[in-house]
Length: 150
Image (tube, rainbow, N blue to C red; front, side, top):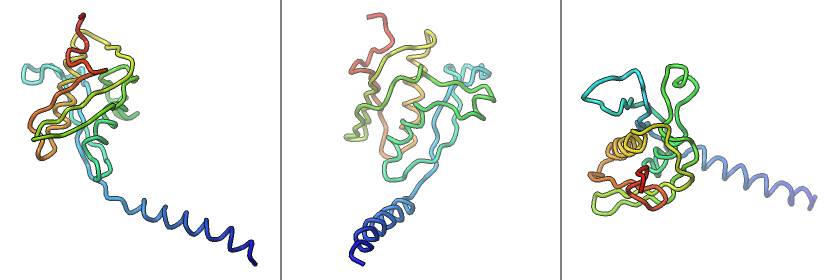
């Protein structure tokens, strides 16, 4: 009977922890992807907002993770494209006095001349949807001039 308690107690603890995670609140946010079919002076980077469900405890950071994940299979089929080559991830993300600073880390490879500016615009639009964020600074590997030939 003692052995049953040794096995049962960890199982009960695991079920309790899973139940706590299952109740985590979520919310829908908008991320921005490249839609080459958009050709408008009002949208020079051809960005299209698409919804994503994220954990409400840290929605901005989670939205950035979803942005880096790129389009879903259905979005790819509809012609939407990712903004970078898929090797970046969120390094640091801070907000201070309504200014967000995000540094992405990883191998920097851009699919076109406008890609770095398009990426910056998508990150900015994604973060500015959150109350309290008015300014966004984007860097890659610590460089705000990422994508330049410097």
